[in-house]
Amino acid sequence: SQKIEQNSEALNIQEGKTATLTCNYTNYSPAYLQWYRQDPGRGPVFLLLIRENEKEKRKERLKVTFDTTLKQSLFHITASQPADSATYLCALEYNNNDMRFGAGTRLTVKP
Amino acid sequence: DVKVTQSSRYLVKRTGEKVFLECVQDMDHENMFWYRQDPGLGLRLIYFSYDVKMKEKGDIPEGYSVSREKKERFSLILESASTNQTSMYLCASSLLTGSDGELFFGEGSRLTVL
Image 1 (cartoon, each protein chain N blue to C red):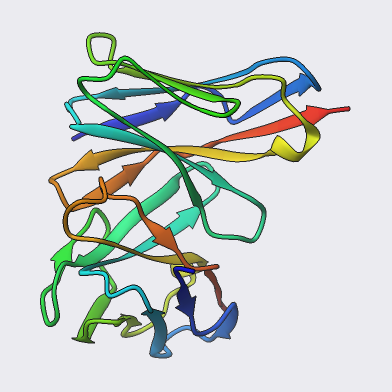
Image 2 (image 1 turned 30 degrees about the vertical axis):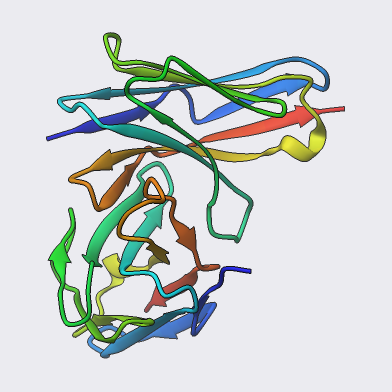
């Protein structure tokens, strides 16, 4: 069965630095991949989507890459701020109608 | 603004009770989903529905059933709650086509089974 792994459970960085989160997957070839942000006690909120034929996507301070050979997506937040502290989830398209999620990485940005 | 509303934020139930979790969306979305979220395991798909009265099993359907009688409403039912069903339950919806599968989530229902 497909497996989705996010590199670490928690990541701590200093304000102003770039945060890089990793999402690896196996036994599957998704047509697209999404990243979501989740704050404590809230539902996830969609951030970005990247398709299998796209290498990179940007949105303001966010950048996502998608390497279908390595079966990996990287999610970058540049010039990070304490307000970026949250859990970030990657999700892979599965069977056209539903998404399957990784366990998430909890990012803490320290002032 | 798009909205997915889950009926209860917090519930406490006893083992063996029947539990209903309700979800309503106001976006005319065809797809609706129920996930559960547990620490270290992420979101796991229980059931989803792509049309009224249609349902598909996700990865962990055992112990659950669903009902979709109207397009805007998707209910998750625990026929006989057990302690291992203590979890955060998240409902989501999406368009069938044209939106790249972006999911809109509710705020979650935290269920404790004693």
